Image (cartoon, rainbow, N blue to C red):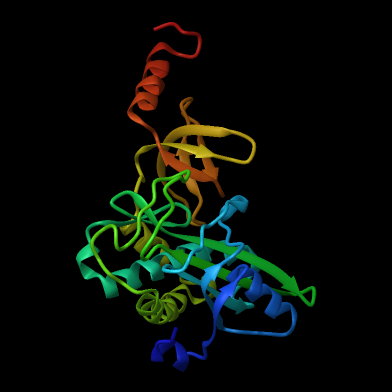
Length: 272
């Protein structure tokens, strides 16, 4: 792996490994020991890679596994916005390496990059307060370059499967520069409005019927928009509008959409 000159000029450094349990775990461990970043941690494979909600992220050699450690990137309440920053940077980097995919790439709330509707990349933002007052954030990014899992909660793909050959090294070189540009646009949260607007231009599923899996329940409704903080605004069957701060989002299958429509026509008591 090597850093793009733009990233090096911005003060980024690189710690590349053949294998780690998790690049995010390594990044936060270094922060607790005094590392202040910005530091990229990469691994050719991970033995304990993970996604959101503790889901396993299969991490065999051939894909890109990278985390960017940032210390005091913004106020703690703005840290979740970094998932939008990272998604746009991954989108930029893939198009830099494979411009033919421009019309096939989309972004899925809150943290996935899709190609042809299948998951191509995921993002995991993790933070820790160090010295009781300073926020350290690990922005974990996994991009399927040459392989993808067959059994997942959401259909997956990889760059080779969609017809382009991009090595993890080439993608990381582009990504390290793209993150510099997107972080500058974000401007410690002051530029989130511009990030949100760019994200929405690439968004998949906004305006469609979705199922949202939360820790304690599942909701269905229409994903109407993102609010100013990046929360998903979900219109529920009873007409209420709910802001979702975090959750797993899936498009409703045709049968689910039909069932929801019939329930609306009949009403909650079963009458028409």
